[in-house]
Structures are given as structure tokens and as C-alpha cells.
Image 1 (cartoon, rainbow, N blue to C red):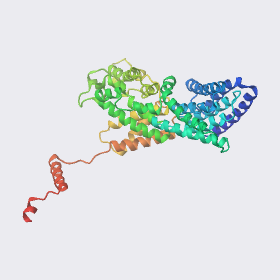
Image 2: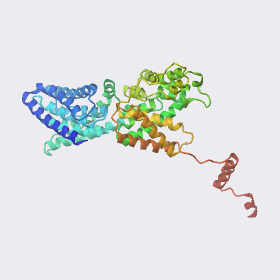
Image 3: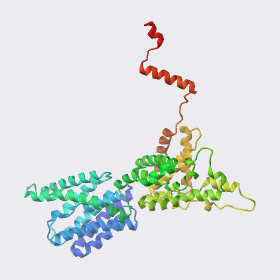
Length: 463
């Protein structure tokens, strides 16, 4: 974070504190609109993605916190049954953003504390345990992790009450209720998580791992109908995973997005080089325009397949953006070479429809897809050749403007290139020749005999 961004963030917190005090003096009626404005200001000041969907989703989680607290207090229920950690846990799992979860915990706690007849102790319960719960479930990949987090949160809530009451141990039923509160809240989060994933059009790590299972019907189709594409997607997934870890992006999302980015090739798998039998290229008998249409349509076909199999919109973005609006260069060159006199070919007709990658993860998959295909085409891959190809491909994508709409920085691109070179160098390295078949067979027999310690006939007779 730059010094300017840090100063803006500090100024925002001071401004927020001032608004809190003003809202308190004016009464509960201004709490909701005040915090909705603060949420919008928070995204702007902290450089979060200021999309309307993210704002509405965050606002909804804040309102859920306020409504549940208001209901419990107005109906004179024990405050210990309020789900203090429900919204922060959902925010962490859905957005993978600790800042948003902490903001919801603080905003929800202050808002509920302003409700008439609300005891002051609800404020530390919301803030302390809401923030703790976000850390417990951050990047959780198993449902059991959330359940364990619920038990830990329940224990934290018990300790919070003991601390508030200055280590005076009261009736044990309150502590049991608080512990069960944390555990039951975690179970509720697991139950409603798919609903919020659908409403927010997002995906959690838990759902991503389910989609990564090779037994998924769509991946099974790819394995059987387009095995070359499936293997290519696995390599692209490994490259994307490592690159995202290097720059701090969501590596699991990128890996699973890479698994599905080429599912559109299932429809006409034999027209793509990785699925073709050697010396049988179906494009040899087609015009460049027809070949271009078949190649470019795999994006459209992929989106249709994803919707048919109800794949989350978060992964559909990888299908749409993994080529951006780049040029289908091979068939564009073929079209130019076959030109007749007084005719022209427009480059725009040989470009993918886009859009360009809008996130770090989709941009990394675009780069990984391109460098893997280019490296696979090398006849005699060496580390030097692989390094040259990787730099050339990434530079071309950068110059072509394919990375203009994502927030990758130049230093990120350099680190991504280094990761690609290291992994591709290990995958496509040159191998030592084994010699002719006779020598190989002789060596295998000799090594087998030595391993089994079979004595030679001559040695046996001499003994």
C-alpha cells in the first residue's frame, strides 16, 4: 500500500468515527443509511472493486446482521442467541476478503448497540468474535474446517463474556448457550452458503474443490472426447496455480478456471491440434475463414456448455476471457497468403469476441494457455528456447493490449514469467537417448539379473 493510500484510509476511519458519533446523537433512524454510505465510501477509499454487485452484497450482509439483532432485542430474547458471527463468516467465505468481513463486524456491532434497550456488551461480542471468526474460516477448503471454526468461535465467545464480567463466573447455562451459538452459527453458514453463492453469483473454495473433481460430468466428457485438451488444461491449471501463489492471487480459482476454460472444444475436438492424430489435420481441407469460425466458436460453445451444466458464473468468465480479443494469427496468415488481387482481409474478422481479462486470475490463465501451447510446439525444447518463447508470448499479449483491463503490474508479469519458465522447463526438458533396441533389451536383462542376484552358469560350475 502506498503512502497516499494509507493516508486516505486513515482519513476515512477518522471520518467514519465522526459519522458514528453524529448518527448516535441523531438517533437510530439514521444508522442504516449512514452505514450504507460508509460501505460505499469504504470500497472507494480502500481501492476495492467498486462494482454495484459487491456493494449490494456487502450491504445485504450488513442488513442481515442488523435485522437479526433487532429481532432478538425487540422480542426480549437473550442477547446470547444473536448470531454475532454469521455475516462476517459469510463475507469471508464468499468474498475471500478479511477487510470486508471486519468492516461488517464493526458496522453490525455498532448498529445493534444503537438499538433501544440493547445492552452495551453486544458491541464487543460483535466486533471481537466477528473479527476472530473471519480469521478462522479464511480460505477454508473443507466443511469440517468451518465446523471446527464454529467450536473455536463458541469458546471465544465464552472467554469474551468472562472477560467482560471481569472474570466473574456466573450461571453456567449462559456459557453453554454462547458455545452452542458459535457451533450452530457455523452449521447455519454451511447450510445457507449455497444460497448466497447463487444470489451473489460467486463461488467459495469449498465449491471450487467440488468442481475440480475429475468425476464431474463435464470433465468426464472432456477426458473421453477431448483427452488432449484435458491434458492441456491440467498443465495450464498447474501453471496458473503456481503463478497466482507467486503474486498473491486466488490460486484455487485460477486452477479450476483453467480446468474449464477450453470445455468448448468438446463439440469439435478433432479440429484442435492437441486432439488430432499425427498427419491428419482436418483444417487442410478447409478455407481459412471456415477454420477460423470453428476455432473461435469454442468460446461460445464453452459458455453454452457451462450454462447447460450449471457451472458458476465465476468460471464462465474464464471461458469468455481466456483469449481476450486476440488474433487467430495462424489462419489470419493463411487467409492473407491465399488472397487474390484487389481483395483485402480485415484483421478484426480474425479476432476473438472478448472480453479481455478483467481479473488477475483470468489474465494469468490467458498467459498460461498461450505459453503452454507455444512451448508444446517446440521441436527441441531447451531451457533457453522455453525462456525465449515465454517472454515472446507474454510480450506479444502485453503489446496487443490483452492485459489492459486487469490489475496486473509489470513486476507481477516478471514474476509470472519466471514461474512459467521454471515449470515448463521441468515439463518439456530434453531427455537422454536410450540407444537402440538391442542394447536396451540387453541392459534391461542384465540389470534384472543383477537385481535378482542370479548366479552365472560359469560361476556356478567353478564353485
